[in-house]
Image (cartoon, rainbow, N blue to C red; front, side):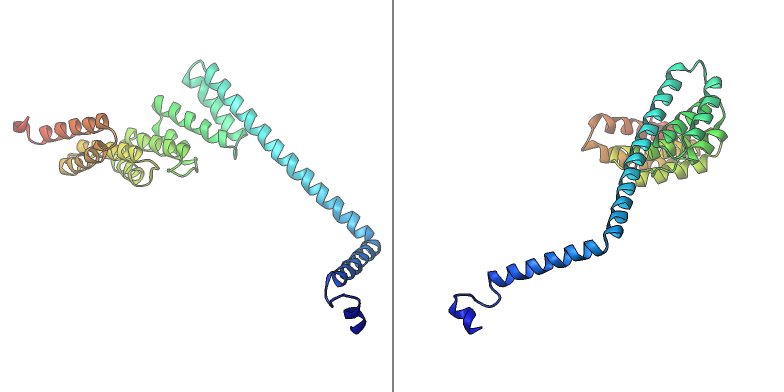
Length: 232
């Protein structure tokens, strides 16, 4: 150590770090030499994994593109709902697990509903797993409620609309769902509950969209008039 100090070197200084680096480099080189085969095999394995991931991503993108193209073709080429239904049923089976399949299910459920088959419409809508705070999920639940109502199950439709009135992403979507619930309540003769809903959503909408608020006030007035004809 005295010689090192006399030479102007401090223990643990730059020279010491350089020596440590050189020793580490030699140790690494020696380890690679002794384990060359393992290194090569490991590198090949990583390369295979990377290639596999890239292939899978590209394949999935290709499937999504094909699904979207076929759905557009079905929409444009449909000659009637009766002919469209079997094609859509085959489509959603073929592309199960692809996002476009849920869009196909929406169209299928809508077609079933339009052709007077609400039970089938509800079945297909129930197969859509998207959350109701997502666009596809919201549309699916709205179709489900419409199918329930068309089937004569007003209470089930009411429950579905009430659920959407709580969990839909945007305020206007929640108001629309609650307005639908109020409409069903009116048909069930539960006027006070319907009035309460219309009054609340009209007040909420006033700060965002005066036109929307006026529509709900109009419906509120209709319910009040229906409840008390003398006030109209």
